[in-house]
Image 1 (cartoon, rainbow, N blue to C red):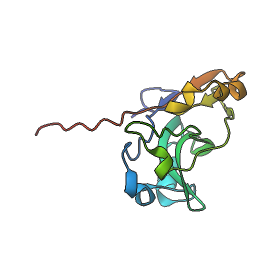
Image 2 (cartoon, rainbow, N blue to C red; image 1 turned 135 degrees about the horizontal axis):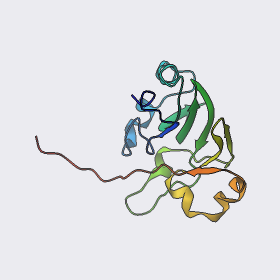
Image 3 (cartoon, one colour; image 1 turned 180 degrees about the horizontal axis):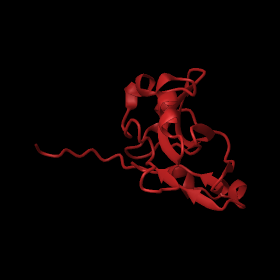
Amino acid sequence: MAKGEGLDLLVFPELSLTGYLTNWMTPTVSISEGSKEMNEILEKAKGISLIFGAIIEDRGQFYNSAIFVEDGKILGIHRKVYLPTYGMFDEGRYFTRGKIFSPIESKLGRFGILICEDAWHVDAYLPLFWVSFLRTPSTSSRISFIPL
């Protein structure tokens, strides 16, 4: 549908594939770069640029990630660096923190991605100083139920 609407970039929230509160199910709902699920997303993303949130598994570690896909190819994956572990947040218990902030080159320009809490830390912006666009996917941990 987005392709037909003429969108250049479609941005989904943090952890958009799973929702925020995965807790002990984190390993079960994670995907990896070469997985069937990732390949299905890449196939559907031909002809569009998108950023989506997912739990990426890499060598037994799980990362809260934002994946930048363009024309069916992964251009970059940002792994959330600052994992909140205060109040109701316990991301450090389920995720491994990312290590770097780096720009992603796209046909639309140079992008920086910060995931939610990353945006509260000034050192996250320094490596992204020369980007054309900064995207900060975030989500709410609030659980809400819609009565049927």
